[in-house]
Length: 143
Image 1 (cartoon, one colour):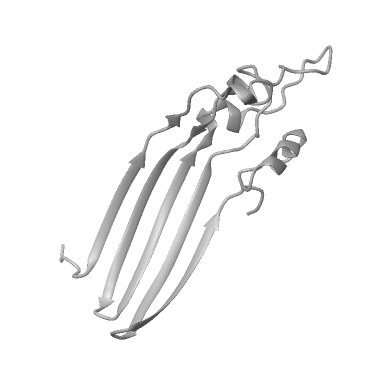
Image 2 (cartoon, one colour):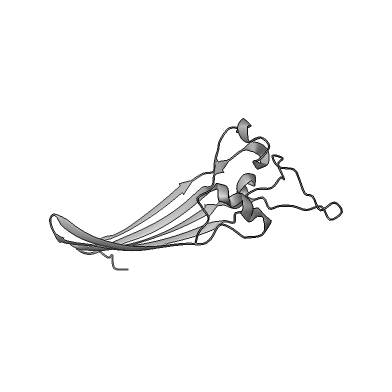
């Protein structure tokens, strides 16, 4: 295989990072904990010429492994009430795992100026339904 000059690849992984118990949120957050999700990233960049470069990144965030982010509003079929807020199986934000794709181009038309353009798409975290009410507490409410 012939090697393409100016081609670069990158891989990154960030493990799930759990915070300590958030005692002030004991009655709200499932398991009264929050965590940043595990993240998997892959990127590729290609310098077409010394003045023009293209790049693309893919990122996957694994929210389903954290109770506060992923738990739904469970319901007991006899009482209509599920687990209580603040318990391990209690209501959460009902977020699903997320995929993010970013693409961009850079054109440096003189030593002091460059023009950049890019596009970012991310799948919605929010499933809808009763859990959506909790999402007004976050900034992650759009696609």
